[in-house]
Image (cartoon, rainbow, N blue to C red; front, side, top):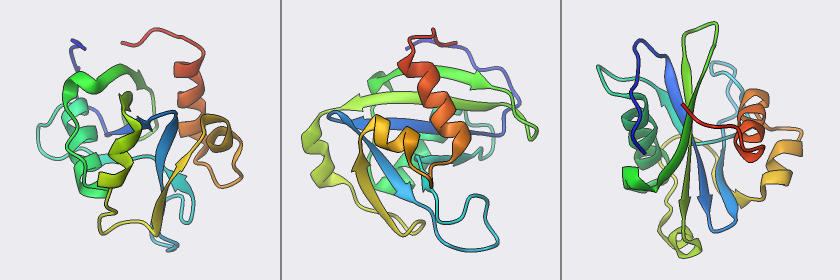
Length: 142
């Protein structure tokens, strides 16, 4: 995937398909974080001058212990946010990668969840479900 990344941006998320399912993380249940106790995707805030993709891949390594080859990222799109632009990426990995996932120091646990279960779950982070729908509906990336 060859895309240019305008700056600034606030953060990036990765919809990580492991086989047919998404690897998602149940956020910590604390009052001092956004979306406590909700199902999240790997990703987070920008550090230094990293690109959006570098941000999403670094956060995935920190949160799920996976080093993702940037070539596994098949789609990405910028979304406007009150805090600044946010990027949403999609990567597909084989199902056997699930055995290599190790939860980092954030979150209560991780699971593999179908796309429909994620989109319809009452504890899904709404904007992420919306962004996933954009990808699933076949809209072109940036």
